[in-house]
Image (cartoon, rainbow, N blue to C red; front, side, top):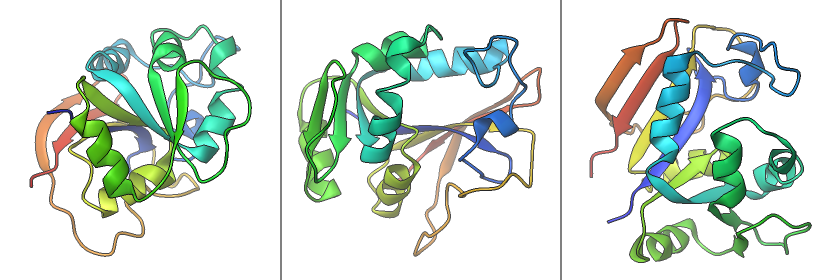
Length: 188
């Protein structure tokens, strides 16, 4: 059965809004930050298992104007070609290949996507959506790249949860740049 896999970049204390503040700056003007080889390989392993993504409306609006013009590989090719399901109550504006709007209760959206044949369904960016999915118990796995910074401003990944959610660590590596590559399964 397909899994919902949340993938996010964050600071060590859970900040998720400004990745350029908790990863090394890039020499490439098209990239706000640079990943070390291990973090890039981790990202590649995440997207290699996915053939669909769930995006929040804000992330869709931001990314549809960004990713089609960027050559950052392999994520640009992945996000530009993968089937994108945008959770929204309004019609989508603009065009981005393989994008459909979905609406309704999250549990029904997720159940419908998981019932279709295919591979994993990723949640990339879309922090508010990921927080809602975690809070509703709809995420099967979390894959996190945590940069070695604390005190960055902005939202925290797990803020606002109404109750504790137990996670099972299934993978943990430290990279040469000091990033943590974390994989958590959400037990049912």
